[in-house]
Length: 610
Image 1: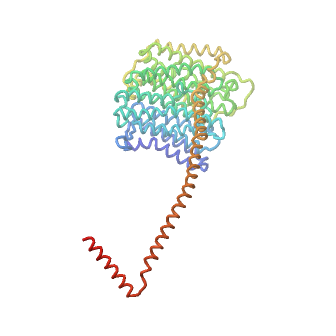
Image 2: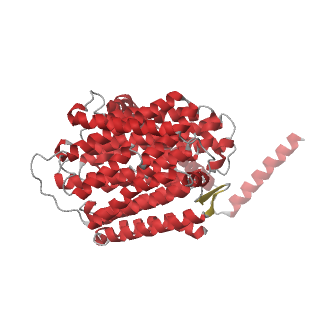
Image 3: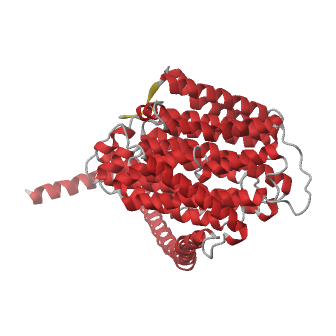
């Protein structure tokens, strides 16, 4: 069964890489090929979730890579593969970008494979590999229309912001190694000693909050809406932004073991759910409303991770994936037919074709937390755990859930109001309606996972034990508040649901990031460049010129001195040679006379010395 597990991420990864290498030659076949590969991946994920395979391979000494489809990874793998398949089917039906189909489909498959690697990774090194590929492909997908400078700028902002948080994973890996968790298995991180355990938890929390667009990183998701509709439907529903929440849910024991990590995580999620819910209410752009609501809904998952409500957080993740991918795809369809994302310009969009309007309504009602749809049941499960932990945490989550009904109803009010003028729109194609209908059905069917006996089976699957079930009054209270808030929002209409600055512009978080981080860094870079040019470069040039001048002067002195010395030595040698040649006359009697003189001198010396 290990071969099945290796094949699960390898199939979309290799298929996506092949489409990218083929380029424009595969543009015509890419949508069908991509949808087929995604469906095959979905089938593999279903089989893997049922059989629970494990696989391992050597990587570095003492640090193997290991994959497993068990516990929380089983439902997540199926969800990621299923949403990817349905989104690619919708893209094939006409929602995909009009150009570079092979590049778009290949990147979508690569992203899906990276997310499946992240979900099934049982060790930090492998999770980091999937995490990195996911970040790189998300940048390319958000900036798919690379001629649009706004889209590429938004992609860069998203990439740099999430990369800032991603550094936490490297800190976590280093701290876990220092703390003795040698294999870096996710299940062993809670067993490290202090202070390494707290440092590991801090790194994981930072990476997760950045990837899931939680406060203060939420602003990157606003610009990411410039990507094509299928990109938003996949990246911002069940995959990229959900990866951070999944990581926190997966490492729940580590957060609880630190003593502070769980509390910080829970309150960060609750604050994001509440504040970004207000941001969603203030939006007049449909995709911006859905983006802000994504941050808010992910806040509930982060709250669940901090409160130890893994079952409720898992169900929230699954239900949100179905509802939000459905809404993003329909928003993209209306953008194509109406030419605008502004809510006032979408008046009457739900009336023609009515089938798409009904599908949008089902997704919006699920997002609003209407009973008996899945997000209502999921929130009750996780809020029940929050109530046992802190009543104020429960109250904050309940207020955020009530806001969800307000912003969902605001979107419905605009798209169902009569259009001011007749707009000719094409009828919905069956190839598009089919995947959207499956997503809408999932919004209702997933409610069953919150009820016994399926809830008990889910608790056994995610291996978290039994969690407190919501009382009847809790379910009635949350459902009643959602209905009351929706009724008020519908009667108030869109014009009265406006909030003052800074809520419409996402609390000014991007401006604050530019003021606090970007501009100081650029100013420091300019200062460093000026210092480099004005001081270091001039110093190096001066040193070089001085060295050259010294070399020339030294060269002249050395050359003159050495030349004179060599010439004097040569002259001396010549004179010595001349003197040595004078006795060499070739006459025998002179040689005898020289020998007699020499022996006489030696005899005299010998006599004197003795």
